[in-house]
Image (cartoon, rainbow, N blue to C red; front, side, top):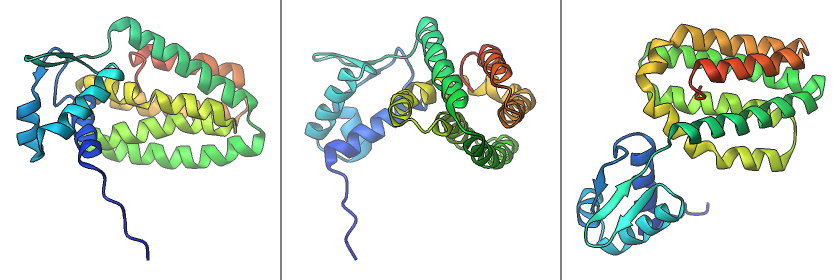
Length: 211
């Protein structure tokens, strides 16, 4: 049995810092330091420095020499742009899907909705975030287009960041979000492609382009 390869120190630092940014542990506008992060993760400063450089390239932080790294977030325009791209990818994929593909995805989507509801009841925001990202990804999967799916996956970190940043809003809209997700699945199963696109656009508008 092959041994499971452990991530390198720099990869581990990258994952820990990135997760902290996406989940709101390191809030937008705050400064994080190389030395303090190294102590927090029990790592040397070199892998942390490499991780911060990678995160700067991805646009999540801005490094200021001798001062630390400024955590950046998504502004309203970026969130709106995220919604536009997601709407396009999800709607076109459902339009391209066969009846069999839509039925297969619908079964899985309905199971996901029940899990989403349980996550809300348990006040488990990380679980709900994971589920809702996979839920919307399912609409893209239905179109069976690997390039679209690759593009959608590149948006996952931005989607995750936006969801965690609006955790209280999501919890307050629990019933509405679940109802909207059910409606999307039913429109997909009924082959109402135009209705699906319109409902998805409204859903993103109602939830701030997030869920």
